[in-house]
Image 1 (tube, rainbow, N blue to C red):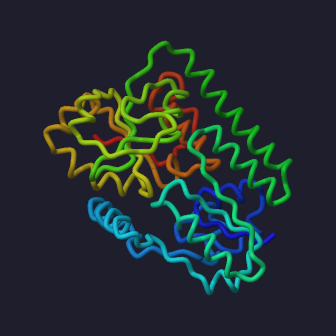
Image 2: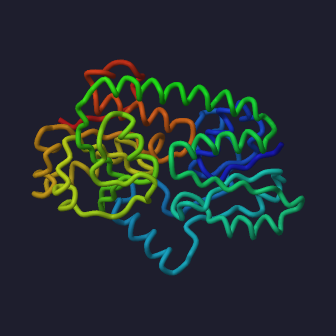
Image 3: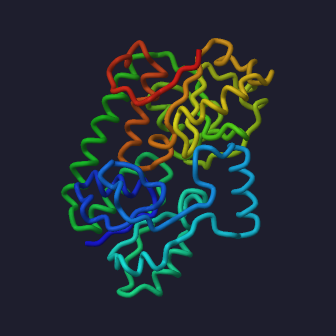
Length: 304
C-alpha cells in the first residue's frame, strides 16, 4: 500500500508498525524516525521555523483562521505523482495539519480516489485505538495489537510505580508561552497517571488560552513547559524573556526552581507511540524519588 501521512503522529504510527517503506509522502513537519528524512514532502507552511517569535506565530495563526485562509499548502501535483492508496490526516486541530474537508476535496480529484483515514484522538485510550485503526487499514492488524500491548505495559508500569506515593504534586503543563496556553486533551490524563494533579488543563478538553495571573492563581508546585511544535531549547528562549514578569516570578514552582522545559515537538503534542515517552518524562519530573534514572535522557532542560 502506498501511504501518505499529513501529520507527524501518523508517520510515527506507520513507522512503529514497521511500514516505513510504504510511506511515499509525508508532511513538512514529519521528522521522526530519521528514516523518513528523504521522503517527498506534500505540505508546506509559510511560517514554519524556529526563528519566528511565538507571539507572532500566534497572531499569524489567529489572523489566518479569522479570514478562513488555509494555514498549510497541499502539494497537489506531488500527490498526483505519488498516487497514494491511503492518506492519513486529522480534523481535530486546525493548527496541526490541513483540515479534513480540504483533504477530502483534493482526494476527489486525484486518480484512483485514495482512502482517507481521519485520526481524532483526544484521550490516551483513543491514541492507542488510532494505532489499531491504522494497522487494520494497512493490513497488519496483528502488528497493531503487538505495538499497543507493548505501550500498555509501559503505561501500566508507570501507573503501578506512581501509586506507591500518596503525594500528588500540583502540576501545570503549558503548551504555549506567548501567550500562555494550558495543556489539553490527553496531557492532564498523563499527569494523573504519573502521580500528579493538573491544575489548569482538563482531561479530554482542548488547550485554551490563559494568563500568567491564572497560572499564578493555580499555584502549581511543578511547571512543565511543553510548547506545541517547539523543542525545549526553542521554548527556553521565550522562557528567559517571560520569566522576568512579576506574575511569573510569583508562581510557586518558579520560586522553588521547579520549572522543566521538555520537547513539545517530539513528545506531548504528537498523539502517536511516543506519547508513552511523554508519560515517562512526566513521571520522572513528578516523582523523581520513584522514577529518577529509570528512563533515557530525552532532552529535558531545567533552568538554573
